[in-house]
Length: 304
Image (tube, rainbow, N blue to C red):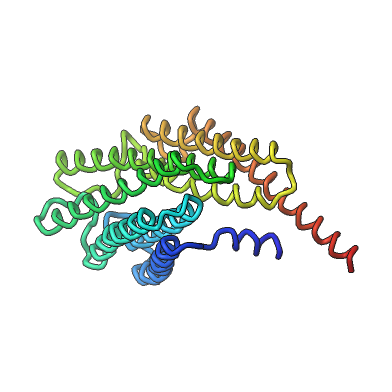
């Protein structure tokens, strides 16, 4: 089995709750791809409160989150009832949320913070309720992971640190809702995007927090296929986690002081250093996998 096939194999679902979430992920990732055509038909109109970018980005995000949650469930003790309840609740609630966002876009209505008319306000409230249910599921998954840690130490680091970041992202999401509601209350209109201060894009740290766990999982799976010693593997895993935490920290500060994500400054310098550290760690991880492949190739050649 080649390293790439081995890694793909390690990411496949095993138990039924995970397969349920993977099917949901496949549906929403397919939705994201299909909505690219809708975006193209709309002259690639990416900006604004009403844009097909929303079905694309939210479908991608929830697709990754569902698949990730399924993968995590496969690494926890086999408790079918709890895992089944979590998987179905997470799938249904997240599907309702992204489905409402998608429906609003096709209706030509803003999905978020659109409380100026009763119908739109009811839809936004329903979205908020489903987000609350999703949050409960994710926090439950974090607690379960901490109480019954995955047996593989690298996986345990990836899962617990990743879910902790996701929980942080949920908190940032509440801050975004507060900013958006304040904007509507003060200006009587829906924001095109939620801004803090002059140019701080609030969804920037929100997205960073939500999707670090996927990188952690890939790093852990690749490290299992590498040639480094267990001590080096664990150190590299912690460098990935620490560097990504630095990315989130500086991204959050950059936003809180009202600066755009790419606006140069002292905080963006720290953000860049964190990204560099993360990149170097991932390069070393990939090199370990490549060396493993070379070693297997040499062994196979000598046998032949």
